Amino acid sequence: MQERRTKWSTNFSEWFRDVIFQAGVYDYRYPVKGAGVWPPLGMRLRNNVINLMKRLLDETGHEEVLFPTLIPEELIGKEAEHIAKFEEEIFWVTRGGKESLSHRLALRPTSETAIMEMFKLWIHSHTDLPIKIYQVVSVFRCETKATAPMIRLREISMFKEAHTAHRNREEAEEQVKEAINIYKEFFERLAIPFIISIRPEWDKFAGAVYTIAFDTLMPDGKTLQIGTVHYLGTNFSKAFDVTYLTPQGTHEYVHTTSYGISERVIAALIAVHGDDHGLVLPPFIAPIQIVIVPIMYGEDVEVLNYSKEVFEELRKKGYRVVLDDRRDITPGEKYYYWELRGVPLRIEIGPRDLKQKEVTLVRRDTFKRVSVSKESYLKVLEETLNKIHCTVRERAYAWFNIKFHKARNLKEVWEILEERKGVVEVPWCGNDECGLKLEEEVKGNVLGYDINEDKSAVKGEKCIICGKDAEHWIRVARRY
Ligand code: A5A
Ligand code: ZN
Image (cartoon, rainbow, N blue to C red; front, side, top):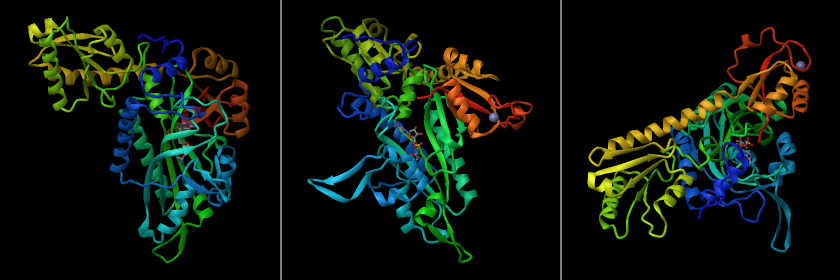
């Protein structure tokens, strides 16, 4: 049953494909390009991740809604910049049965336009504001770049999009800050390291005034955008004529924001914590936290009963636990099987454990093992799960933190991107032209600059392209 195993450390992209498939997290064999299937174990992981996000949104006054998948052409075309950027990627529904539709319908690539149409009906007065809603749905984008499972999809099925409307710019920008804090908390809980950048003009969301993005680093040194927060100003409210009555009796356009994540988050979770043996999942998000493997010789009823007792006890305590009492495979094969699936803790129970009234705990992250008495094992187990979370987190951050470099000439940038990988910060004058030239010269992407940039840090620095005074240290990387 042992499959070919590629290495996390040396061949990440193959490792990723192999591991998500072999571990039963994601099946990309479905015959539509850019669409994949979530089998049971993957679905459980995905639900845990979505529920964490939902909890954070609910706690901050967001309400869940559900909009239709189809958007009429006239709606999706209302905001000029929005449609201009999305045009190339929209899937159109043009027929119903044998008949052509008189008005084509778009499969939503995102829902700003659908939502604005309803905001117009829902918002009348300043007392109706703010509105903060979200949904978790499928959206469709006919991505022209090569698709990749979970990472670049045509049907993004775990698209969490939040949409908010406010009285003015200040309140909308407060909302942007709240959204950033929600995402920070979310990624911190998942122990996914990230940087937050304000995207350059040429790379902001279609219809946004500005876009703030969360990027993480994949093991191959390429960055992955795992979340975005957009301040949309009045671009959409003007296009859809969404106004409210102020206390003074005037009518004003609402200011809107939107922010989104997708199954890329799960790709990042798997990528940053994995190892050559497969998945490594932080315990609180893992669909299975503990697996019990009885080590039986023949009909070892006593070992099995002892294992069942431990299983019941843990189940009652609320742990997500599995008792692997399969008879047709060896304990060694079981270890391999559950290691691949990233189960954080294994409990081995053999005749010796039974005799000594002990259990043996083995950590997935470090493979360290300890035997503890049955009396005190619950406390040790809980502590161990907490330690696993800390270790996994520290490991991911330690790797991430050494992947940032500064450079002042193109040759250096090139060398870092080629050899050491990661993110390079370079001085930049702020002109789009220089930014675009930089991307071309180093075959990389400008991620933007730190939202909390220390202005004094660029003093005296010269633009890497034109040599004029620099405005920002701008981040460059190869990205997914
Ligand atoms: N309405 C806003 C929130 C929006 O659509 N923003 S976005 O276009 O930036 O998408 C939100 C997030 O979805 C991105 O930050 C990215 O993490 C993810 N995403 C975008 N395109 C994707 C794709 N083709 N496959 C998987 N995830 C994608
Ligand atoms: Zn310049």
